[in-house]
Image (cartoon, rainbow, N blue to C red; front, side):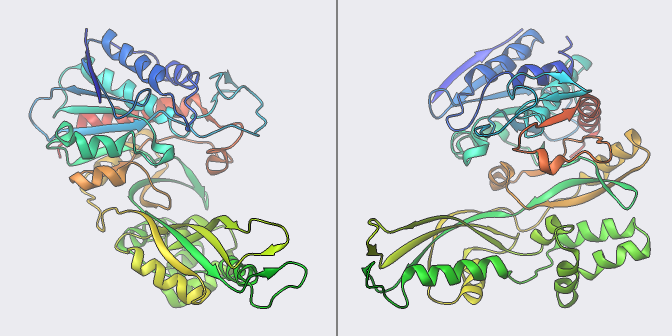
Length: 442
């Protein structure tokens, strides 16, 4: 572990900060976040803010900084990661690590996930320092390795340096707050819960033999039937409290005709029919109503003329809050049958319940900044570093607001070619985050 200190109003323009962050190639693996994190450290130093660098491994640093507050609220944590996913094989209109400002948007890998968010958080942190003590201590964590499991980032800090976050109950981080246009309304989903990683390994067995002779009931044949069942079928519907709150909040804001399909999702008996009729339109919400499994890797066979007697299948499972590996394995067995022998590879549990006490304040800020805003609580169908902070009692709100124009394809651009974010949306988000800091009371 490496440690160091840095020290000594205003900070850089949030859009220029984002452009600078994008220019650091922090593709993970391997990450190489050092130069990017040191850039943030330099900005804090220039603003008169001390910071610490902590690392489990060389070139995988994490930055921690704290501003002392007025003692009127518990500490509030701001955190985000600066590593990004690969751009390999993608064709970009503008260079993915150029940070170019074109057509009113900042282009580059991480513009949405999540250097845009880090820019908002760092900008707001520096602004809070310049404006005087915030209500409570403000802690900033700039993290490595979120895109590859968080082993060198949030997990390392939570397991080995939990005292850094002592007293904090709430955090602002990814992933939520970007406009979703539906039925002529502008929804702002704020993440208050997320699914859990539940990775599985399955083995399928059958008679082996000579490829020229062939066999019946081979492992390959069984695997084909299992993959077809996964592709054609679904695991059962479960309406968890976070999903119910999300759906009800959206339905309440829509006319009866548009709200009816959403409300039907709250009853497992009618939800299946509604989801079949909707196709992909309700897919994000559907994934928040089921434990899910995606087959991602197959290992089998070593020689072209030998029929393997064993085939291995790796599965990316995600469980709902309140469910665990045993639930997923049972439901998967009911879907594909007993010929897939399953074992757990990794389970990252998250909290079964959400603390929504800061949600009304965050929602009111969005309504101030956008008169048409309809804030709603949302459950993330993926995972974030929030799962690690939840282990030390910190509730994350995915609150990196972006006021996006209708037609902006946020979900399609994340991790994809031509990732970009409107510059005005980043400014909107930075203001929303700063107001949240000012009004936090625990």
